[in-house]
Amino acid sequence: MWLKTLCGVAVVVVVAMLCLVRCGVPQDTLMLARVQAAMATDTEASDEEVRSKLVAQDQAWRKFAELVEKREFGGIMVDADFVELVKQVAALAKRQRVLIERNEDDAEFNRQALERFELLWRDAERYLAK
Image (cartoon, rainbow, N blue to C red; front, side, top):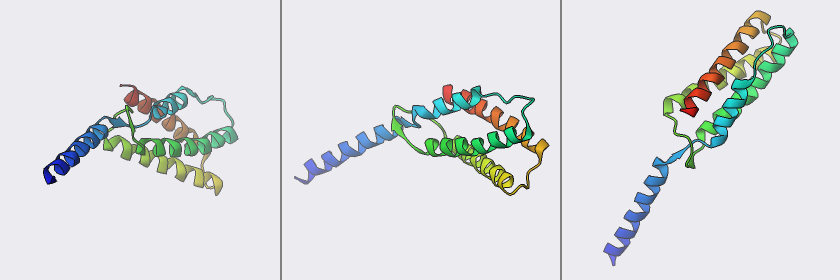
């Protein structure tokens, strides 16, 4: 009797491990990265437009960080370093939003930050599409 129970438990453990091995981030993660990577900032955008886009970057990176934490069967495989980098970028986007809300931001730095976020989206999209 105990042998039958032990075999049943072993089968469940093996199936669970196979599911975990084949689980990755949701496909929506790649779609979000593609949409964000495709957005280009107008070089003639006003300071307010740039500020608005930076606030939107906070929202997008926060959503992206949530998605890379999720796992689903058949999802996109990512390593822990990628997840950690996404969390760090999301934290930077949040910090930039806070600076904007406090009116402690700098127009030139805002433009540079937005350009860097756009480059990071392109890198994330390439990584996930591999």
